[in-house]
Length: 147
Length: 147
DNA sequence: TTGATATTGATAATGAGTTTCATTCGCTGT
DNA sequence: ACAGCGAATGAAACTCATTATCAATATCAA
Image 1: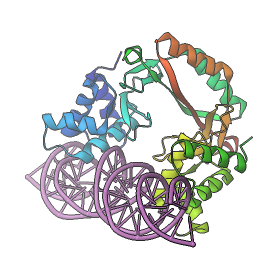
Image 2: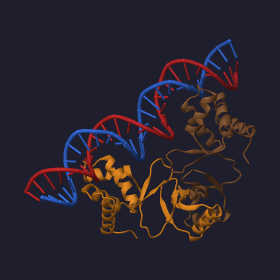
Image 3: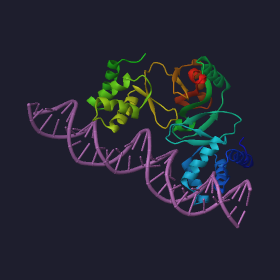
Image 4: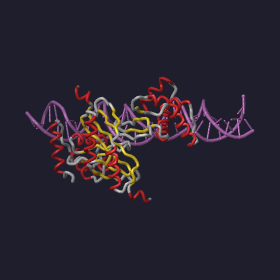
């Protein structure tokens, strides 16, 4: 379950004021539009959607705002090696990994506690302090296997 | 343990002739230089090294050849989300994952059979056919923790 | 309302990687 | 050795994602 728009708006406002930054109409619009997306979007895709609502919105503003949302813990960056970064809502509740279809791009989020724990074990074994991790499985989904 | 240079040269020659492509002095030099590298290099870094040996070598040739080496199963592409692809020798023996220090870039290769098996289980559960996967753990290495 | 300063949008710039194309090279048949 | 053909090369132009610059504008605290 995602945060609702109100939640994220408050979170973002709070983050901005902590950093002595300002809430603006553009930032509100970008946040609202981002939260509505069903799929993981690139900054470019989000820009295309936003242009329909506000044709004056700038390219750079979208990129800048997505950076801010990431810092604020509202969005999370995903890198599937496509050459551009995708964003997903960071619900902060459950971390999860991704299973991506290399044909159609369908994207399943999963969480496997056992894998998570084993990862921690590896990190500890080498004396590292875990900061982050990314696990992406690439495969062919059942639909694409048929065609 | 890596393939030695002789091995990879034969492998590459064979791959090229299968594809009706040709072994050239540039390709030989790039392969040899790539195999000498101790760390995972970007195409750009390799180009810098190569220029010292052969200042006439082209930018594009290095990129093209790394693509070929990847197709030939001699190199493998790594994406740590840095904005550029790194290459490691593909020994084809053991797949492994990476533990990267976010401070100094130190890079440990590890393999955990349990994690591998659990990944397969996840993929199967969703009816996918596994094509590839990437698991990167990001942390702070013991040295960097002290400073 | 005003002033300090953060923000914006347009545009230029960057950096990785790819494409284009004329020239050169490698190989195969003579 | 030689010719001919297609593959390979290097230079330079190009693409695509993202970032930096900067003058004009918007926000907010006083």
